[in-house]
Amino acid sequence: MLLSGLGLLCSMTLHIASLTGHAIQLQNLLTEDMQFRAMTSITAGIFVVWLPAALIAQRINKGNRLKFSWKDVLAGCPQWMSYAVYGLFAYAFINFFLSISTREMDSQQGLRTFSGHWMLFYGMALCIFFSSWRRPSLLRTRHCLAGHEVAHNDQFCSLCGLPAVQSGQDEN
Ligand SMILES: [Zn+2]
Image (cartoon, rainbow, N blue to C red; front, side, top):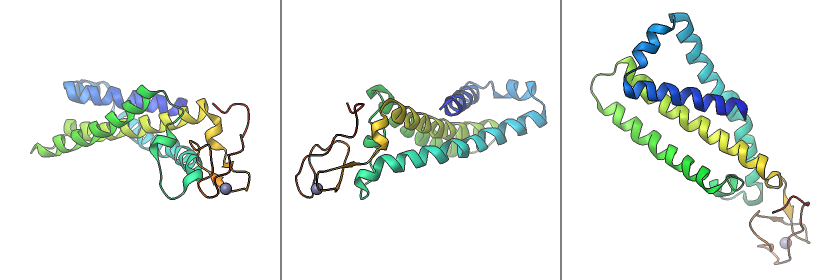
């Protein structure tokens, strides 16, 4: 969770720098070697952060395997947080098309394109971690009295109609 927050902060800084044209100054500040190391650690960080995030998301969705629901995954997040993720999602795509639509592709444009997506990945991972941390009950599978799996938001089993068994005190 800390790492995904840090990654979001880093990619956001880079993104704002590339938008406002400060990336060149940043580039001059760092040596070639340092730039390369920063790039690789940000990219590697995405994989490090996304592996557990994807596992958590998958586990939360166990209750309904048929449709993967972002709403369920982010159920533990405050409302503004899930809106922020949707906003980031839309923004990353708009940013992507805007930056590839300009003809000349200099390093500034490239950085803008990439950092927009880095922001999205880190932001999404952060929300997934936060959601499962706030509501650990999301990670547990709920069952009805007859033993069928029940979705997190359902009080009754969709198969037999029996009430779901409460899976602990932290259910809220
Ligand atoms: Zn049932």
